[in-house]
Length: 524
Image 1 (cartoon, helix red, strand yellow):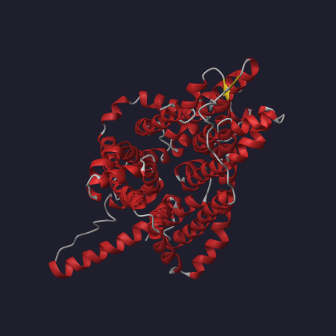
Image 2: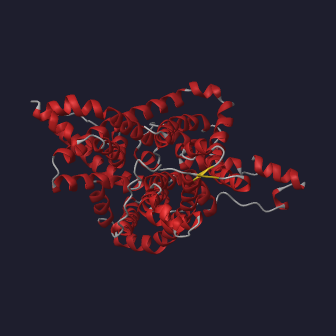
Image 3: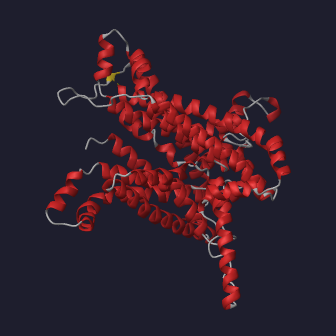
């Protein structure tokens, strides 16, 4: 429905508006978007692949701790990182203050310092918090590869670096493409960071055209272009993996899977530095800046506006988590018990939502819901003499609906992975012992699926809590979540006042990140 609504609004608009958008807005915004996505993809690929290789192939001091810490930047939303880096690298921030004191400069006119509010700054911020997508995918693939292929390459005379470049990276290409696709989707979806840093991407243009210029059809037309870009990105990702057939089976029990090479001297120091820097830049600097500001505003934790935003966030996130878990469980269970083509197609269609940026989804959700609200209100006025108002589009329901559409893929993936770990023989054994399909589901599958279901609900809850792009377009008047509260304060140049809500978001985001890190490092 959201996709159909977007194209209907776009093509029902004025043709002159189409011409104006295609000549004056879309080309410039498309170039900025392409540059942001392209450079962010390069930087995140370099950091993610390098760090994944170091922690899986070598042994050095702090390796185990760093392999967990390298995932921490996922807890920092990109807009929070942008606000934190804006303060950290500002004229009054610690870096420029130290720089001026070191060289005895008196004012900003005495020296040149890179501006964080630029395309380069946006690439830095995005790469710092998004590289874990590539890191996680590559690390999992490197762990699955075992020693067999690398051992064969070593016996043929290849050194560790050549094995990495010629054997391990080509075998990990599917994982790299998956992680890179997630990075590109997140970069396309962002609105808070790009607006704050002055990069006019397609996402920002949709927001600006709709809310600041009052042109809904123009915003929908830009959204159509953005949807085509998303489809192209997903098509490239599938095409890159289409002809690749790599066996990823681990080595036998007689041969240890992991035999890390011990590093010493300057090599050990270089490996530790290469793994620490991304964590410091992507997590400790943004979290430290916000924690420092929040520590001076302890009294704000009891303010009514923060408590109200926290209540709205919990309500919306819990509702979205419950809805997506129920739908995802139904999809995954249907795929398990009835392996038919319609079931597979339904699962693929449901998974499209994650590829739709939040601003695009906001337009596609709001207009149909507003039309339905008006229809219900008209019927009630005619037959009951009552006005129902905006029941759906004027409440938090619109945010819940958009979040459910966007994050259903995440919940379905987690629950489907849980089902994959349960042998089909469990179902068969239960049926041969006289249980019906419903009794098997209730007494056998659901108790075993509880961890996967809880994980799925937690992931959707946290992602909805952090979501800004759709929430800022769909929220009713006087309805703030923690994310929109941070955005409002930051847009008024009050980043320090936004720190309290930001710390709550960061702490909530740490929960799934630490769970993922521990699951990867564990042996069970």
